[in-house]
Structure formats: structure tokens, C-alpha cells
Length: 362
Image 1 (spheres, rainbow, N blue to C red):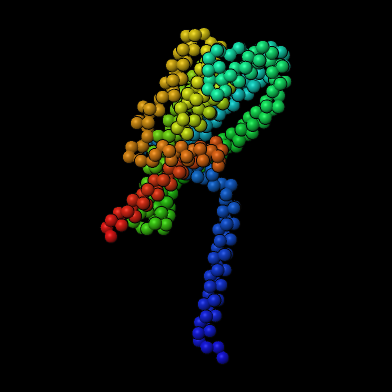
Image 2 (cartoon, helix red, strand yellow):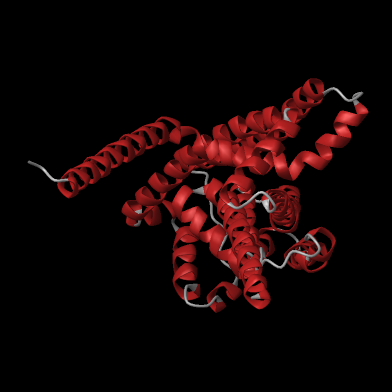
């Protein structure tokens, strides 16, 4: 006969096995669901960030349109997509036109390169080499191209890959804008869901507090980091467009990336200044130099105006988030990485502070 202890032991084993099977099935279901929605995770995350950052402006638009959520969301989506597509087409047109002109002039044998300025040799590390190659190209462009054809081929392949990635990124942005419009049209429901989620993860008392903290952090980073980066890139792009700098759209994108990473736009504009001095008259070149310096230092007075007051996120956290996000997800990662890591930092510090207060009370 089987005594009671053996029956209890067998029952406990079967209970453990049954629990393991249930957990395994739940894990399989969760993994399967994640794989299904994974292609949409990035646009949804970016859509949430856009919706939270832009909602104050959306609320004003909604009030101006008589309080209609659907109408305001439709108008916002159309305007936002137009604001995204218009500069994208301008930048793309700039790159295509520049490339076409260079190819045509090279095939016709009329393409010439101005000799470098003497100051090019003074550039740190690469000055001498750049000056030598530049001088060779100004003397005999065809020979220089033949000599460096393998390197030029690699550069061309990288440029094409970058252009393809940028096109995909623009499509993701369009999808994210549409998602943000849907979220803002249902803002109250989205806010209630977030409160319930945080309440479930933390506790009932902290749900609203953590939701508001997430909202305020996203808006602060969007205004104080991304907003300033867009302003600096736009100002730099306008200046280069006026000076007719070749591929000004590409340099504008580089300025945007540098500004998000908290690096001075002068790292790009410095090379542009040297080019402008080599092809333009002295007075316009000096004016552009002053303008470029102003663009590079403009964040010093823009940050107090746009950076959210009372948010203690260190710039180092933003920098790591931007660079890590770029490595992980490409161009869009510059935005998502900076915002997500800053949000995670603020949530962690809030949790740590709350835990410390409880320890003090004990």
C-alpha cells in the first residue's frame, strides 16, 4: 500500500510538472506573440514618443477646431506627414542633382576641382593626406579617380546603403506619425491604460505618478535635445543652401546626428567653411563663417529656453542613449535611444529614491 506521505509527494510532483507545463505554454504564447508584432515594435514606440511630445500642441489644435478629436487627429497627421516629406524630398533632390551634375561633367571631361587652401594642411591628423589627394585631383582628376577607384567604390556602396536605410527610416517615420495621430485621437484611453499598466507593475498608489513622470521626461528630452538638434540642423542647412554647398542635404543630416549626440555642429561646418573660402569671395565666406559659429554655439542659449525645467537627466545619459541607439537601430535609433535611456534613467532614479525613503522611515 502507498502511504499518505508517498501520495502527497506524488501529488506535489504532478503539481510542479503541471505548473511547469503551464509556464512553458505561456512562455511559448508570449514569444510567439512577440515575434508576430516585432516588425511593428519600433514604429509603435516612436509613435508613442511623438504622441506624448506633441500632445500639448495637439490639444491647442483640437480646441481651435471645436474640440473634435478625429478632425484634429486627421489635420495633425496630414500636416506632420507633409512636414516630414517636404524636407526629405528637398534633401534627396539636392543629393540627386549634385550627383547628376558631377557625373555629367566628369563624363564630358569638364569637371574640375579647385586646389585646396593652404590651411587644409593644418588640419589635425588627416591634413597632409587630404591636401595631397585634393591637389592631385585639381591637377588631373581622371588619373586621381583611377588611382583611388577601389576606395571610391567602397564609399559609393556605403553611400547607397545609407540612402536605402534612410528611405526605410522615412517610411517608418510616416507610419509612426500615423500611429501617433491614432493615439492622440484616443488620448484619454491611452493615458488610462498606461496608468493601469504602471499600477499593475508597481502598486496602485504609484501608477499615476510613474505615468506622469514618463510623460514629462519624454517631453523634456524631445524639447531640450531633439528640438535643439532640429533647429541647429535646419539653420546649418539653410546657410549651406544659400552658399550653394554641394550635397548640403547630406551635411545637414550629419549636423543633426552630431547635435543629438551633444557634439558641436562645427565638426561638420568647419570643413564646409574651408570649402566656402576656397570657392567664394572673401566677404560672403566671412559672413558664412560667423553664421556657422553662431549655429554651433546656439545650443548654449537654446537649452535654457527649451530644455524641460526640473528634469535632472544628465547629458551623458542622453549621449550614451543616442550613440547606442544609432548602433542598434540606425538613424531612428538616434532619437529612440536618447529618449528611452533618459526615460529609463528617470524611472530608475525615482524608484531608487522611493526605496531610500522607505528605508529611512524604517
